[in-house]
Length: 91
Image (tube, rainbow, N blue to C red):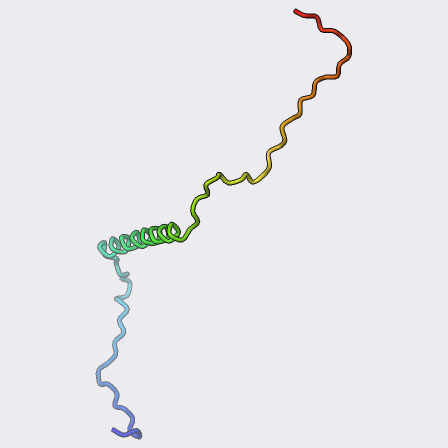
């Protein structure tokens, strides 16, 4: 065959089958079970991987408790009442 000759078409017909009309493909229970198990294992793997990564790379917990986000109000100052010169009787 030379470059000037067109290629010979394949004599076999091409049949595209997308299922019979009105029939929906059913999912096999084993396929659904395997897919669910794979999804659960993937989530477990992601959680375990992220936990191990952050435990190796993350900051160590502080020795002191963290500071509060706001300051506490000051304690009230107790002042003795002014001396009025009156004597309180003893009881």
